[in-house]
Amino acid sequence: MSTLPQGKDASDVPTHVAIIMDGNGRWAKAKGLPRTVGHRQGAEVVRTVVQTAADMGVDYLTLYGFSSDNWKRPPSEVRDLMELLRFYLRSEIAYLHKNGVRLRVIGDRDRLDSDIVGLIEQAEQSTAGNRGLNLVIAISYSGRGEIIDAAQGLAEEVAAGHLQPDQVNEASFAHHLYTADIPDPDLLIRTSGEQRISNFLLWQCAYTEFVFVDTLWPDFSAQDFEDSVREYQRRERRFGTAGA
Image (cartoon, rainbow, N blue to C red; front, side):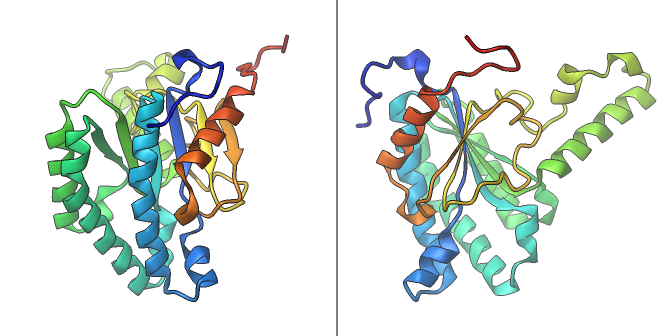
């Protein structure tokens, strides 16, 4: 069971943690293994991180599972990733449900095979009543694409006369995002040493604290997650105001 850092209480724990799970391919290459092995090992780490986040009192955990740009990867790798997604959706839902986790998926489902969309819908419906950790997985996701979708939704409301142009503001815009009922991330973690957010939650991360770790995702542990939260807790969040 994970515990809070010494001297901290539940109010210090980030409400929403987002993670860019990076480094599966490099992990596999370093071991002389196919990239698919790295992806499979990375999927195993997800359960550990979900459990650790729940134990620490995190309410929302968003994982960047597959970006819209990942469709450009070799077809064989994309097929393997989709098979891994199918396996995860079939094998992990019982575990998530048993532990009170609610699963949601954000992204462009039009590019996914119909059976995967069906598995996603079934998983969301079966866990919808759970009141524990909210697990959000971004699949076929683009931050810019999400912003465009939101802008189009607002434009349609204005064109239909349901919204006046001067009523377009941050709140009305955010209402059209995939994450409309999800708080913005307090903390974003990226593994593998890369220091960029790669088109992930661009609108939502306006005031998010970033923690970049060198560990490759398949080696990311509960301790690494806790250390990232500790780093977050050392930060002073100002939201544009002057410091103390």
